[in-house]
Length: 201
Image (tube, rainbow, N blue to C red; front, side, top):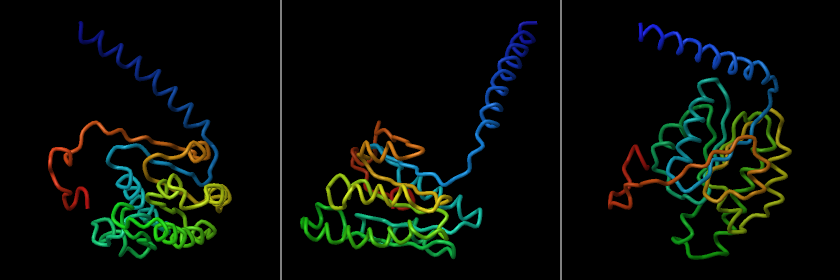
């Protein structure tokens, strides 16, 4: 008898929940390209973006990837996704700023990289563009923030864009359609574990 009551309450609760969710799905009728920002201090921002690349490829979409800051070309994501026929992959950095220790070089590299990204953002043949670690170029002042926001705002109407990196600006967050903030609760690196292939690389 107790189980029957629990089951009945569960069915009623799930029926109410289903009606609310179904109504929300029915009300979402717009179809357009989304600007997604994945920020925060936790691990997984780029990983999330590259998971979306795989999803887009599964739908036969053309994808452009611009990796700012990083200079290494031996990561697992590039080794796999970069060789897929629907992906245009660019590693556009010289390494982390503490590696180069040269602000003028970092600015020049950022501006060259942005030109590659800007062309993608103007090309409707790209269904998804990933701007990995773009937030750093904005927060460091390496790129003109207004110009970047303008290019994002005036891209082709069905083009999706994912921007990753810590410290996304208020203006970028305001422009975005979807924002996820990944928190840092715990990280193996702080326990002395080096970056692991397949997980971090």
